[in-house]
Image (cartoon, rainbow, N blue to C red; front, side, top):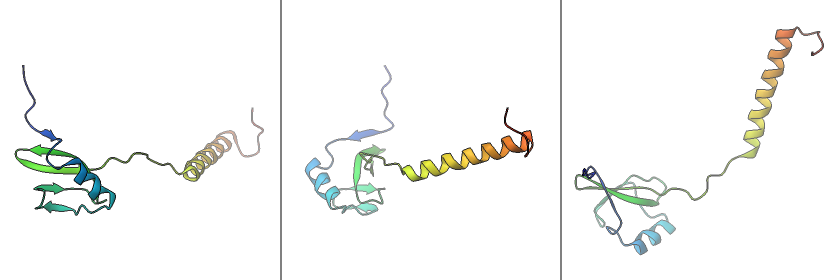
Length: 100
């Protein structure tokens, strides 16, 4: 059976306690970290999983727990789409006709 060998997820390269502490204070700097022998590609100061690709250890950004949406933006987009729809309807049926 074929086993995937392109990359590995390292669970124990850095102690979870250290990751949690440095994530809390957002202390991870973008670039190579000599202390932990890892390349950090997170600009938020927090890391998640650590991958090893051909002996190169890469720390990925932490996935946010909750993605928030802006309700005002959603309502604005809805109103713009509705206004375009009404404009196209009136243009197609003529400006002075009553809706069927």
